[in-house]
Length: 449
Ligand code: PEP
Ligand code: CO
Image (cartoon, rainbow, N blue to C red; front, side):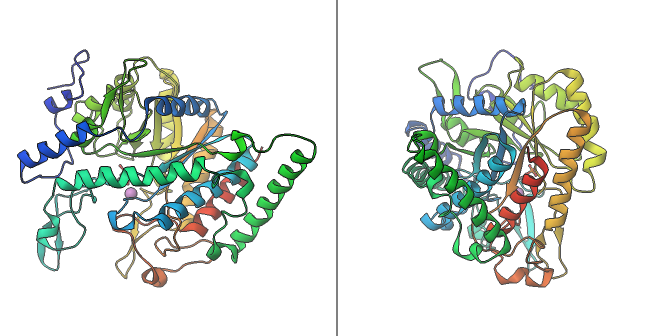
């Protein structure tokens, strides 16, 4: 069935084809877990979701800038205070760098507190001659390459909910409780980054900001105001497992609208954005800001129809198009899409994901991305928008605060042969903290106001 326009409810996606769902072996058990999640408290609140949408609406006009980033795939075993803190730290460092250069607010959205579900290009994979179900994220199965671990287990949905709650709890504590205060801008520099050229550039910039704050204080401006002491930080993930998303979808008592309270912003992957598919059907009815990944294999008319379906009132802040064409594909694919969207008058926030079409496999067998390719796609993204007179309003990264060796290049010129030193990801390769900060400095150069 195609999603008929007038009959949305939080279960209406079940009438459409849902791609990329785990093959849960026991439907009764799945439904029991989902029923339980339905009774549990929402993870985020409708009012926060509305705040994020309003901030994104500003970014559409170029009055703010979206920074979205985090793991490709969060892992239950890495849901620890140091990991959460370090990811938050690097995002705050990047944000302050971009704010300082661009002179406009940076909307901070983590790929965090719920990024546990992954689409895969194939249902199964061959490991040492054995065909195993693919790893679909910790909320479905385990990455461990043995058959028993790869059978999807619905109990993992509940664990995912609990881990998301624990992560959000710490993020809220950090961002409300003073850790995110601009006064601590120097303290966000991590030990292993401090010694690097990036760390030193950051230190210099942080010192200037601290001096500006001291000056304000000297002349009697209140620097302990919430604007400086607290930071607004939002969560996002790919809305992939629709049973889980439905279970956290709640009607807001204030505006009577439906909100998917599993995260503030949700995105639709490049593999699940079929106009008649279950993902579009589900997401059209919730009021969250939505991202949509757009890769090289898209049809422009199709994208326009999806925008109309998901955002019939053409509300700014509702839709973010997260383009991922690759350093080699962006010049071909982005301008026609920009022109079509502009001609249609569709209000979208243009964001660049320079990660997902720049993947390569090394001779040593590591899936990696090079800093140069990522930066090159970003540069083109900005330049193409400027040439078209549209707003390059955001960026989307896979990154971590940890000192991993998953992407090559950067100031330390990490080589293919060094990837094995600390390659931790179960999914796509992430920029480490130093590479992330370097990327922020590079973007800062481009957007310097
Ligand atoms: C992702 O963001 O991890 C992802 C799978 O992206 P895409 O849908 O763009 O391939
Ligand atoms: Co990824």
